[in-house]
Length: 206
Length: 206
DNA sequence: TGACGGCCTGAACACTGTTCCGTATGATAA
DNA sequence: TTATCATACGGAACAGTGTTCAGGCCGTCA
Image (cartoon, rainbow over all chains, first blue to last red; front, side):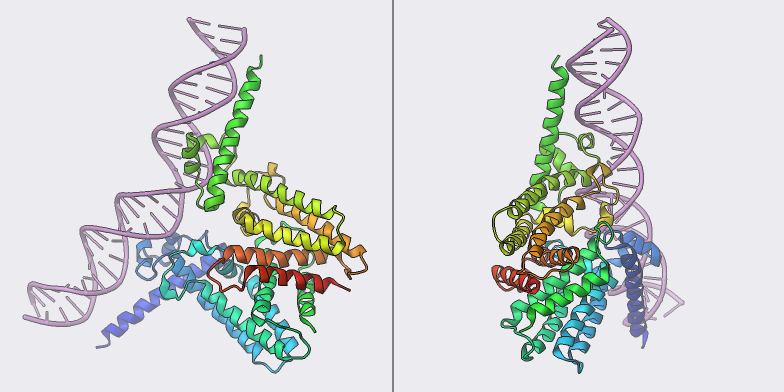
């Protein structure tokens, strides 16, 4: 036999080429600038072919983001299970999260800055939609905070509330720097981020 | 004469009707769901007529947001010049900002959550684009913080950095609650907001 | 009455995501 | 070798979008 295997391999290969082409457009020009026709042109197939591999544009982009977000979650988990102090762990996690957003602005934007109703009927096979990706990253972040709760250095009563609060705070810097990178007269970026981390950790200390 | 006056009045009236119709669609369905054709249908004019009154869709929406944001700035200014303590002023300002965002999600979203490059060539007559609206609100917020700097209760070295940091923090809650109102398992909204304000103020105290 | 000028429209352009139907290819079965 | 059949794919079309532009209507003024 081997023929069905080869077919499957070829199919998988085209699928990868679609993702690859779409990713390149997506990373450099953002979600709205990516069109099915441009992707098709890039891979030298017709637009309708893409629909044999992905349900729709949202589905395609979700798969693109999934891969990238897995890296973030992995990085956060690595930090959490490192030998650092609870305080250092948390700070590293927050910093890694922000850096991830700033280095992958389009991935971050599409996941956290596009209203959920716009993803309304993204294929449910992607398990609950694109947020799931972000929510997993949030879980890792909460793990970092749980470590802090056990440390006497901190005073954290409600981990869940605190974790959500910290998340919204770092999302604030990240998303605003992505959305308004130049039009707003920001102070030096590094200073803004580090000051934010200082204050967040400070507000959590006993 | 009076005829040119009447004409001008009628022109202004149609302009208002356009804004009114667009606002209704915008508030209930958001930016992308508003189409020039639907607005035109609502006011019983042709789509091209709208372009005699507004340069393009972005220009129209900017004018819609301008009106609403003026209210926010006014509210913040009122708080800043009230007789409250510096601490209360700041807290009230932050709370007002968040509430404004949650009560006008589409206005807020379009101003702060749409990447600046998407507004690239919005009519420059709207003085630097739609951010200007938000930046003015930020100014008021910074005024609230300056009041705190003079109070011995607080320890604020760099007002500009601190103001920007506080802004990103409250933008974080506001925008995430707008973007993911239901898909994420939030703790009780009021609890999240108040806890955030507690921590922000706490991190600023001497 | 005729000309001017402002207001408005219909049609078109260039896009978008998406669907559907016909076709061609190539592997399998007779 | 021939016939069958599923699968992969492409072209054209549909229903939208923002935007532009030539032309027509109509009131005002000379």
